[in-house]
Image (cartoon, rainbow, N blue to C red; front, top):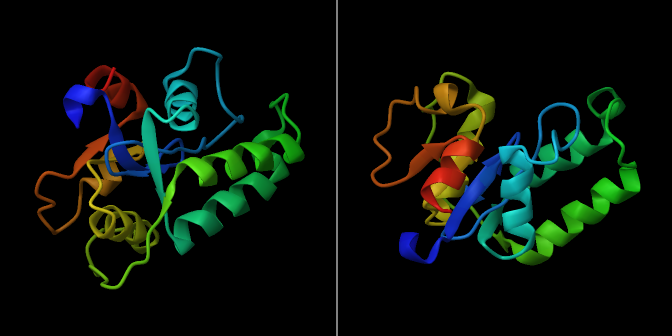
Length: 157
């Protein structure tokens, strides 16, 4: 899939889990600068370049983030527009049911669902600004990659 420029993955806080395609979300200030890596990954997911993977926990985290007005103070988007983008991502993505937990693994229990989603969805990568915390797990993840949005763009141009 790398040769095709596809990255299936989980996109968390600017990113999600992908399996040859991809998805994402932004931690602060909405979608960042017009040419920011996070925004480019989001655009890639919306155009089918990346396939986002969704699970219950990640979906609820996205919904919670979109409802927090403190995060979106400097964003020119409305809540309705952000929900429309999430709905568009859901149409491009793949819903994954997680049947097996891999816990405990990460120091921050709240991040374990990302590893579980990536493994259950056979993702190629987790795209996140939180690479350091996700890389601190006890499990060896085989070929699953942890990447920042910028690294995703460099690897899967």
